[in-house]
Image (cartoon, rainbow, N blue to C red; front, side, top):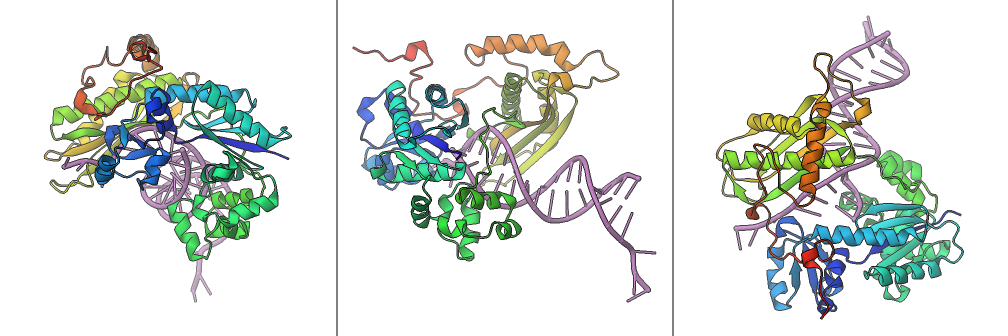
Length: 419
DNA sequence: TCTGGGGTCCTAGGACCC
DNA sequence: TCTGGGGTCCTAGGACCC
């Protein structure tokens, strides 16, 4: 029988912050989204205080103050590095591993004879080598492994490992799990299902897959089958090639000045182009959007976007910047308080798939490839040493990060000392 | 005062083809 | 009265995930 495990770090960002701060054990900790906007991770103590996931910080200020909740800005340099260490450790436990997100991975455990003990070993090893707590869910399908992981986190008695290979055990858990907790069932679907009298995961599992397909979609049909132990979603050990790259951000403060917003979108364009080159891809499609805040009652609301096609697929910052400034002039409107903008690249191909322009000598990629390599190499050692005309070098106001922890593992100056 | 960012997949409908 | 059938490609929008 096939057997999948889902290994998921517990409150990952909070656990990372605690790694070098033993004094934060047992106290409530939260981590914020970009711009210090919303709460995106909570320690168990913070959850117990009733602080919800995704809640804007300003709405829980009182609770934070009253219970001395420790607040951190998101520190992706730290989380990315810790994540890589966790994944490296997991690789020892299965040759087939799919890194599903920054804090979770699916493992193929098909040959393993005592999965629960194996799960415990995984937990202990990650804790010893990296120091963050993980939970392990095991099942014959990915959806069931996900559900097992949910149970492993929710019920203390499981000691962080749950195996749902046994159908009876499976049924007992499904019966007490709300349908909305199932992987692939979001808020909207949960509400629609409710109307059909489907409230628990077991209700969903007992529906006729064909009818679910007709009423909803093939995606939900697969979910139903997976809940019944029929594996429909395989392990993807090779990360799929990206289909789009986005660089977008809310501004640290509202901007109304043409020049300032223009510089900012150029900055996004340059970052997106950098990501594109790191993937080794060329883009044909360039998309730009700007908008005011939907929560801002003080000015006129405005949101607009434009898409352009490059004459020749490119990863050249200069070509992409030129396109973005052209698009920008097409959608700019005076007198608005802009809150957010973003650049999206898409319609990718690889350099060997490019059809060169009949009337020009070589592509942008040929002409500027070396220049881009040099720029990336220089900027790699610390952001913002070289930038293009129009682009805005990063400034303090660009993003609020008032509660940032040190980059303990990725900057020499920030390595903790033991006295 | 203060509300994240980066992705994927599926479906329906229109344009167009023979 | 009554005007086909089968197919592809593209886009926008919706839903989901972390």
